[in-house]
Image 1 (cartoon, rainbow, N blue to C red):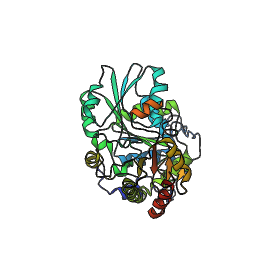
Image 2 (image 1 turned 30 degrees about the vertical axis):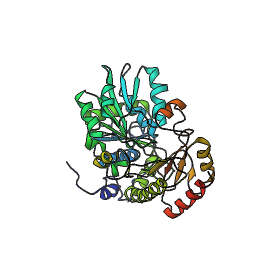
Image 3 (image 1 turned 90 degrees about the horizontal axis):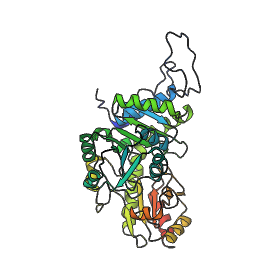
Image 4 (image 1 turned 180 degrees about the vertical axis):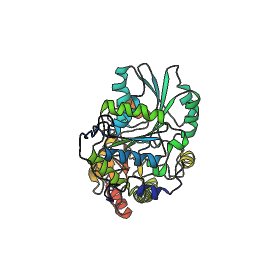
Length: 383
């Protein structure tokens, strides 16, 4: 059944917002590890919190409503969610992956899954022909990240998914940057949507979490087996905290993006900046495709200041953003991919993918944009 309600309404009325027992206006935190069996012949819905917890279930149903899938899952971190999705594969399988993917995903694919005989080919997914050329007899899955982290390259989701389905391949997409407010990949043919919910979904730098939504019941059964078997689940307190953060997602994302667009435009004409990466800029090569599949441009702006020493000097001169790992919070966060999110990539690999030593990533927060610009301008003038 199609849910035609607006996204803002779904955020507040997702089915688990009212406790059916007491009428409480907030999902209760079921701080319990196990549940009593009143009858062995009629076991309860929940028996052990690794296998299922009412608070976590409310969150899983919540993200499923927002993404429009068949079933949702909550994990201890974004990488726990991504790792669980890759556990759907078997030894000997081959993955085609976005070349400038998040460093944690790169590390998983190149340092851990290789020990399980799962191989990966990294390709420039802005060119569908390069994706098709990477197909092997043992290819089992395609992993997309669009916009990519940190160079914000755009992949045509529908085109890649259509080709993948023709070849019987599983498709996975990291939707962390866009969130379901701006981009709903399942509607474009993706099989599994993944989130580091630590970022924009949580939104307040106070919870570590990952989410996954699958497009079919059969995939749901398989993912549930993996989640229960690995036990990398999200606890009830963090599930509740994440739900609280998600309720303001629409309002936050709109304010984030308004600031990010101003920042990107301003950086484009700054003499201390060599290049700006943001899909909302008129000269972004993937803008037309992005606008076809997304409702907004997001709140992450990357830019190159021309060298590692200049980047480090900038990071030491700003006063408004946190200089930190992560993104997607109410406060601005300035990151240095070469030594933070993408430190796991060898330097030569980073350079091949456009992740230079001068590249910084600005997750634009909710501060007054004039203050953000003034702070950054003062820092850039010191370079």
